[in-house]
Length: 128
Ligand SMILES: [Zn+2]
Image (tube, rainbow, N blue to C red):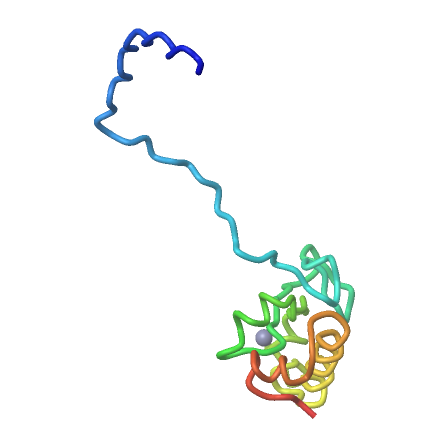
């Protein structure tokens, strides 16, 4: 048996702070805001225009209830305003283009995330 260690001298307790310091935490999103289509979110994926040349919007490929899922799985794409929702050829009004992007995301899902069934479990349906 080791001898019992000598009792330590009592250290003075640190002064209790009456007010907790406010933590200056930097905002940390739970996911990175990124796109499977491009690394440059300031440049239109279709026209190549950047923010200095035109209004660039971020379009969620799956919107409404799936907006958060689109962000989580990086199914977003930067588009010039007119290719987004500011004209008739915008993705919001062009069903063919809309579907094309949705299918690209579904392909990406199958390659990187999981099965079709798992996609449907998250997004609610499979776009054909
Ligand atoms: Zn949009």
